[in-house]
Image (cartoon, rainbow, N blue to C red; front, top):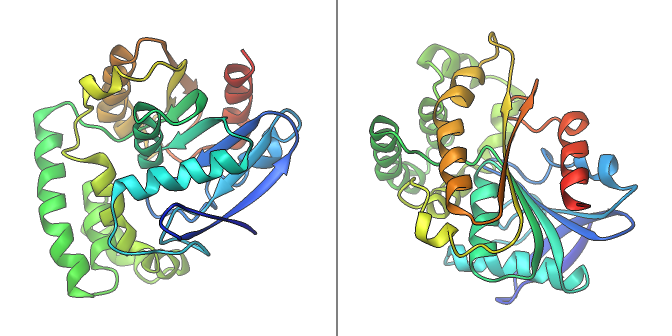
Length: 267
């Protein structure tokens, strides 16, 4: 992996693939860059794709204390490395970070976000606030896996499913990243789309969600709060385009999403 040094001295690890205009990929919760990685070869014919591990994840550093502003500086450092401006794609809570970067005035040409987990309905907002209030204590308690369990309950997993998942290799790998759940919570703030801040985004912005098959575990989330949040984001950004991508769950499917991003970024 290549590295770039952020403003506070933190080393940020990234991969670069392809040629053409720059695109920076921003991952979501519990992701070290692996989830967006398939997008790089799928878009490399048209773009130079920068896929990075957010601070505290993978081979990137984790200078303390954490602040959302430091993550914006990480994106700014990558954009500078890419030549001074770039298109940006953010998935899930990485989409919220990408929106913050655009609202902060970073040199973003065009912006695309996928299934940003903002909440509009009161019940989900209450669940989010309860999750955040518990998360700090759980992370500080140093009990591996407890923060993951809390996060999975928020996303609708049953206690039985969580108990079964604890014995899987994927769970063990995620434990190395669970301290960063607090970082994503900070990025999402009180959980609501901040319409006044979003209105400051002047770039053309694609706001996308998926539409999984009805038997998919993602189907209820997509038809519920994820679509509601996306509609609120799109209504707040002056140059927003709203799109639903059929056949895609919450995890980005490069075969379906890459053509959508390629069309939008080359428009």
